[in-house]
Image 1 (cartoon, rainbow, N blue to C red):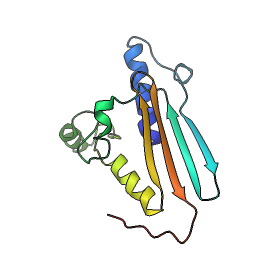
Image 2 (cartoon, rainbow, N blue to C red):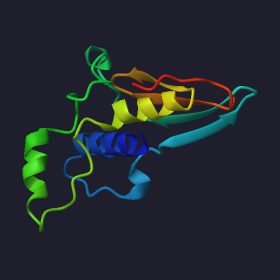
Image 3 (cartoon, helix red, strand yellow):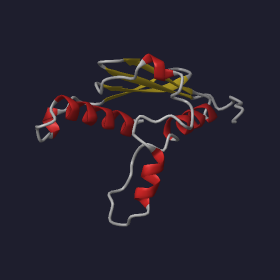
Length: 135
């Protein structure tokens, strides 16, 4: 989830300033907040990476949706030993992250504002007696 936020921030900056060589100070921060309640621990990840269109929100949790380009092209690039490692676009990160959160009695919620950024909330239960059905 952090990688998704960082990638969104960098890609948005590259779109806004295509001629500029970006430096760390040119990018808005990805902010992570940890909070502990009586029943759960929550992690909030906030970015200013441009957000997700509302039309794409339903597809976030599918294994075929990615915003990082063509998956089959990435698989081909993996065969080239000299190519840079592929870090995004296999469409497994969000669905698997939600399965893991639910396995610990929690969940993941995504709130996005297209044109601005995205907030992701990861809730993890602190209760040791929570039974969870994992798909």
